[in-house]
Image 1 (cartoon, rainbow, N blue to C red):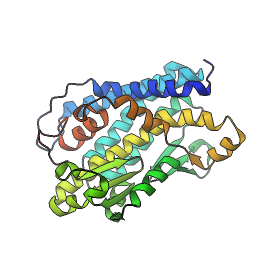
Image 2: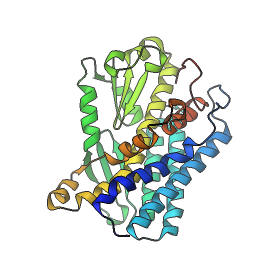
Image 3: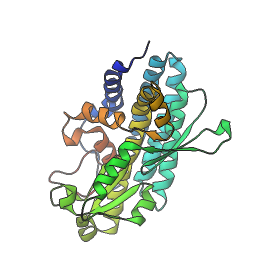
Image 4: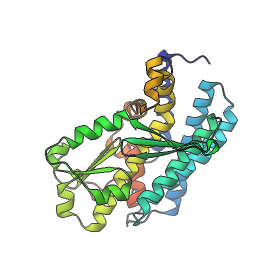
Length: 303
């Protein structure tokens, strides 16, 4: 298949639909509550992420004219590993944020190895992306995720915004504390937090009314969203954006220091925009892995 720039929007939407469909079609009823995640849910989550990794990587292989069978195998392995990383984050332990992130990032690299000549391991930390190729025995390359920078700057410009260094250290991403009004959310438990690519916002209501256990649960929930955005970028957006950047001299120079970070989250957002909140794939996975439920309780609940 000869890839043209005009193919990018259609391919991005196709990949996004493939990326989100397995979660979206699952039954919406909640699994038993109680804070623990049933083993059946964990197994199902790993299987779904393996399917997502395999199909997304296979589509990239088809676009690039590479062996699809190899992409399916490595994509499935990487998808399951990425899912395991999110499950570790959902366990909420003292070191679960970073340990889960490292496992998740390894999964992203393993999946992409299905369409690459060498293994490249990424590490997303806030607006920065480090990528290390073990076979080349060089220091990791570091680039700036442009979309993450812009979104973080926009949220940080809010009058009430300040960095929560402890939460940032736990999650491995930028965590800001803001007022509910600046976050643009309604009052109540559902206004406790939100996530954009590269940045988490936790509201003053969370710090004022929630217990320490609830605060950790919200932080884990939002950190899972950060990892989901990283996967959308690495598995959907980056391969397509890289092809665009390589098309011109300016783009090639820019690509040495910048990753756009736009196409993946945008494509998934468009593909899921028609789904109600309780069936949004990203939300359902985060709820599953942090609360043992497929969706919040009727009338709102803690995360």
